Length: 81
Image (cartoon, rainbow, N blue to C red; front, top):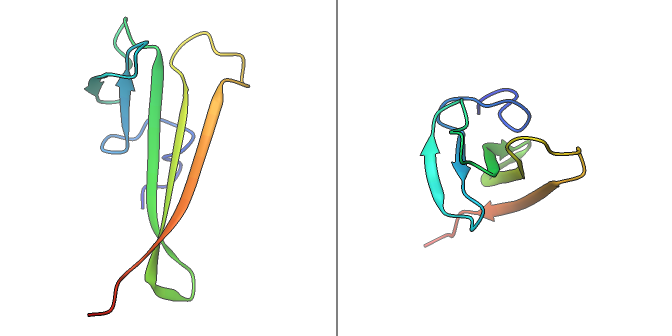
């Protein structure tokens, strides 16, 4: 996992979207026409080797008021075959 990837733009864990949610670019600097910043993190669940914790944070790229943030969290379990 990339430490701090949910709060700062870490290369490989961030991208930028326009006002319709369409992908614009990746990198650590938002392009001028971006409206949303999407950051994510993937890590193992402590004590659960077959589970991954997936977290996504979407916020306004510029001019947000701190309340314009959505947090999504899920756990993915490896299937036994």
